[in-house]
Image (tube, rainbow, N blue to C red; front, side, top):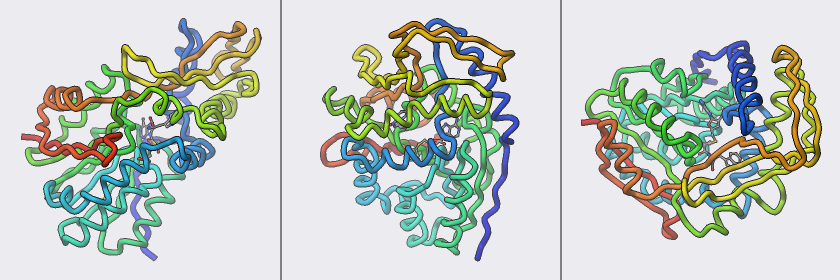
Length: 324
Ligand code: SAH
Ligand code: TRP
């Protein structure tokens, strides 16, 4: 059995310290807010995996359809020997790219990168077993802070799939892309998955499914805060809200307090947070894109869009861009 290398740039203590600061900031702002990267503890990662199989949640299936059709061309066009995957999760769809890269004989190294250590270790171990020809080198880190720690060398393709870039605000995206390309050499590429603007009914259903899995996923962030900071959030007191903001073209997820109540957060200097009945707290956005917007955000950091693929329904796009 091959054991992959895993670098840990994010110790549980760092995560707890960052969570403490972010929760304190978020819960004392108006309106209140909770930061999204904390969704993915072990339970959150399992719930997300369930979301990807829901009938309403089309992005995973659409992106897989594109990868099924285009993985060979993607790997050939990028010419990479190293593929780095940001927010890799279970790297399930990514196997289509690994298959194509191994078959072409060009891919040597795979670097999955995720904030969720358990998920990353499990995925890296499975992939190291399934792809003995690859050097699998996992990195536990936060792509808001640790992009500078990605391994260098070789011709690199960074894959950022699942539409996760849409979970960043426009200014966060700009900073993220600038930071990413600051480590790029000419010829390095970015394979970016972006969900596209479409019928509002379908968009909203994808983030508010009939079985209530997305609602559970959203409320799970409260349990993460309870675990890490000893808070006494009662998830049953919060209702999941998801709507498409037409001006910003993003899905916004919120938790709405069902009653007036006070939550204690011992790990934040014993903060007490008062919620009004009906008060809403933002937990996540998921931006939806159009080609001209994606292209100009890439161009703004010196990346040239070379390929744009969509699924047959035009729901989701994968773009390949290259550093000149
Ligand atoms: N790429 C997979 C998973 C998408 S879910 C897919 O397409 O299905 C988003 C993933 O990004 C989760 O695995 C989560 O743990 C990770 N993630 C979220 N915020 C992150 C951050 N700041 N740094 C690193 N990984 C992050
Ligand atoms: N990257 C996923 C997306 O934006 C994350 C996601 C899916 C998500 N469903 C969610 C985040 C529900 C929070 C709540 O599509």
